[in-house]
Amino acid sequence: MRDLAFVVPVKEFARAKDRLRRAGLDNAEAIARDLAEKVVLACAPGPVIVLSESPDVTRFAHDVGAEVLVTSARSLNGAVQLAYRSLASRYSRLVVAHGDLRHPEGLGDYRPGAGVSIFADHRGLGTNVLALPTGLDFHFRYGPDSAARHVRESQRLDVACHLVLDSPWRFDVDEPSDLDDD
Image (cartoon, rainbow, N blue to C red):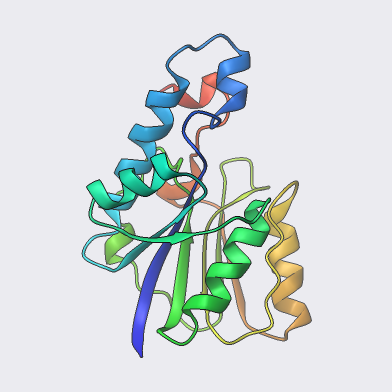
């Protein structure tokens, strides 16, 4: 069993970044692809598994040198849960890093400590990066207030939890204003 792998959920590019599309950005697909590529490449030299829901994402993952886990789960929680169970026999820890991080640099050098580490978004509400040991009965809780929900899930399991509010990974891209430099 290997120590650590990075899991990067990637939504089908043609459907990704809906809020950017609704705001009138006609290059949302290119933005989503560029962000995902930067995240996958930032995870080097660690093994990277891209969660794919489409042939387009599968091709993308192969092109950037990542392994692919095809999932037909209808939700982010379902896809990550499937990956968590599927990869538990191969890795002792997983780092789930979302494919829309604006500054993913350093992910590949990150070595999580014991327990669960939650890297919240810049609002302190969402979960941009989540590191945890495999083999737990952990239930992923992405969605509104996911950082607090992941903290409660760690508490339910009586697992040490570290919530990080000021990491460079706190900036993801959901709204057009998220594309502005800090």
